[in-house]
Image 1 (cartoon, helix red, strand yellow):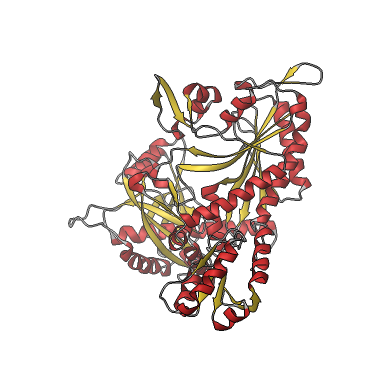
Image 2 (cartoon, rainbow, N blue to C red):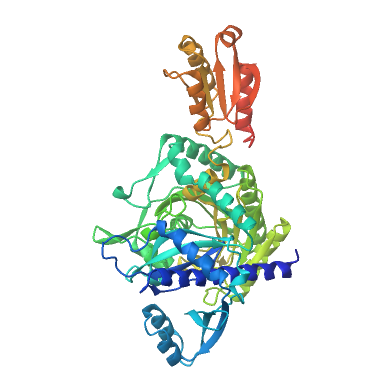
Length: 597
């Protein structure tokens, strides 16, 4: 499909979804008289509409998920009636009169600039009779006959504050999905089923990796022993890789005086995302939302020469950012998280090579974890920014050259840079083809000025260094959530929380099983000896559910020959091996960070 045809197909599908949302709203207002209508856009893979339902006399919710099939049935009747979507333009006074009984529409109309004409889309029957209408920019399809009644489905109900403001009324949001054909809908529902199977919150609980406890503090992650083992494996690899690539590792405090955040600009630009201050020795202190000001303090602790640069400083630094409770989501959106942060401080002449090096390093790391489908987004200068235009141009060109040198596909994110510099965002695709924004490589023209960072150049003059922020994995918490869903909990051996389980066929062979487990532990493998009273088959099922890569079944023959029978978590059998031979094989998988068993 050509790019133009793809755009046209995407636009048509968006129009279908937008039109189905109007049909849903029409069905809802028919079935639930007195319902007030808010907004109903098309979104990725579907649509939603927000409603305010009349209060239920029984005190029960006016609508529940059990009502969705009835709404779907009413929608199919409306589709079969072949209604036209007709666009009408109105002046403000006409629109206010038209929607006199719709308070949410009244507010939207009054918020539009004076003199602006607004459009309304009407649903009209084949005889021209008006059936329903809504304030809407469009576009829509021409007639409901273009909607296949077997190609949409209402998915769920949720609460949503009007205009996203928690101080405004809570509305009821109905989500749906719509496609051109029933085949497309079936494929999407199968995809959603797979997404549900891989949900990191469910798998995290099943594998006992982590938990969250709202009663003790929402958005804060508790790493369990098995999750802790994985985190140690990831962090150890991360540190070794950084040392090999010329980085030094820093550790900095979790709090700092208000002066630090005033100087960095966070209190001016980011205060709503910071936790409230605490008073210590009659001074205001803040939990850190970023690591960069602390790294700058270390830089400014000594006089720096051009000979010292570049400096590559990295930190697994835990930061704290306030997020509204409504957007918290498992490991993917939290309030306390550990950034795999780094700051590269260099001369202007070193900028281009440093950008290329950090991009190559990032791509290598992602490949090690099994992510190979990666796309770059080059974010350019926003309307409000700091720094000389020449520095913006040079930095942007360095970013572009690095992307081209690596042969990465990329898009321009026009105006998407931070106010203090352009950036590259790397988005990875997981096993289900979903795109996740992870790595950021960000120039900063702001903090070197604010903190008066300098170095002595070869000519003896003091100059301002360039500073590059880089979060590679993003944060360990979010990365861990993506990792769980990418592998569905069946992790590569090198990061699996449990790598080997030794299963005796009966308790007679517990001693041999325990001996093998200890030998493998001595090879730094994560091993459990399954010595409980359950039957062997039950132990195998349990280990498969725990997604342990290798299950070593041992009985009389294995004990007499010094071997193990090897069963993989996917049910495959491997030839029996001597214990030492298996240990070498498993250790090699770990050391090479192999993705297969």
